[in-house]
Length: 203
Ligand code: GRF
Image 1 (cartoon, rainbow, N blue to C red):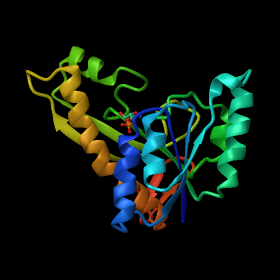
Image 2 (cartoon, helix red, strand yellow; image 1 turned 180 degrees about the vertical axis):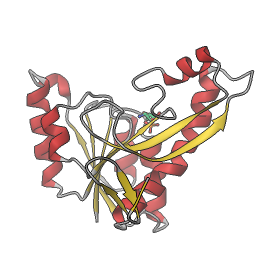
Image 3 (cartoon, rainbow, N blue to C red; image 1 turned 30 degrees about the horizontal axis):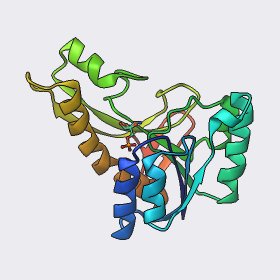
């Protein structure tokens, strides 16, 4: 089973997936990492792990449609079973989402459906919520709105800052993303059109 990872930045989630793969806990192989930012640290992580690292800078394309068209071509060259978004900071076109519907996952730093979009930690702090966390979900055309697959929650303490929260959430992300990817690649996790199922049971 073949995985393509898309990212824009540090790639600590990619690193967690690479480590899971090296312990045979992923059920597949990361065959390529693609970034819209040529200097993303995640590309270096990929190279260091011997994975094909591809920079595809969005600034070289005139429109979102043109970029996503080029991205589809690069992805399909690698014949993936699963596309993993790991900090890929781009809004995807409907055509792109449709092409990979049911075989594309994203990780988001909030307990969805709370706090879609950006600045999730700041919003959680401003609201004074007692729990925060992260979610893996199938990607649909609705931004951060696809069916949730797995979540990790943590207690927010009085002295938490955006930075401490971000760090705590990140540590949870690294735990749950390899689990979700492993479920999918082992045929246990499916997108049903309306939701997600694990071992045939609705999540
Ligand atoms: C994570 O916080 C993830 O939830 C969000 O982007 C960030 C990526 O972090 N989608 P990293 O590049 O994997 O360290």
